[in-house]
Length: 227
Image 1 (cartoon, rainbow, N blue to C red):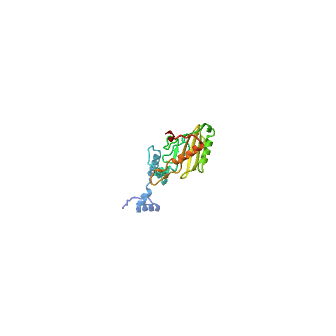
Image 2: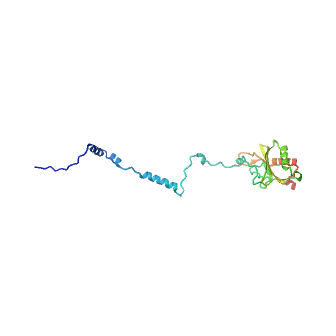
Image 3: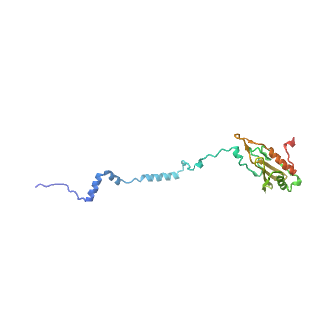
């Protein structure tokens, strides 16, 4: 009697057989579904970001997306400077004439067009600022007093405008005791293109100041009187 010896296989369900068959037919899909998803890359990105934010070393700046911030400011020229002539006292003193403005005369020693301060007679010291205001209005065309104020050191500052040769000119006075410092300046500077040297001189401003001093009767020393 012959006996058949064989291996007994455990019973399998139909569902298990179908799944095994599918894996054999498409082994690539099986590997993709069973392989774990990588989690290293997000961790490295988070670590790099935290190191960048806390690093003491300099990092490259990101260029600005605003085109206006990268614009180079235009060069400063004598013509552009003449559009913004400063007035008012500087450290409690009358300003010098700007180097770009030849139509100016000032009692400031740093001015290229220098004039001596006026001396107030003893009989005019009490109402000096009032007499000065009246002389400006009487001798200058379309004159207007812009500023009249006391200074911290006991002086009085007066600023007036009047019609000049090419626009409105400015007169500034600082009365302290029996001395009067001043600056008479044209506010419009004329240039001949393409040259950068302004046209004009201080003769017109000197003549305007002479009319005022003659009206006042105050002493106005000059270089001509010293000859």
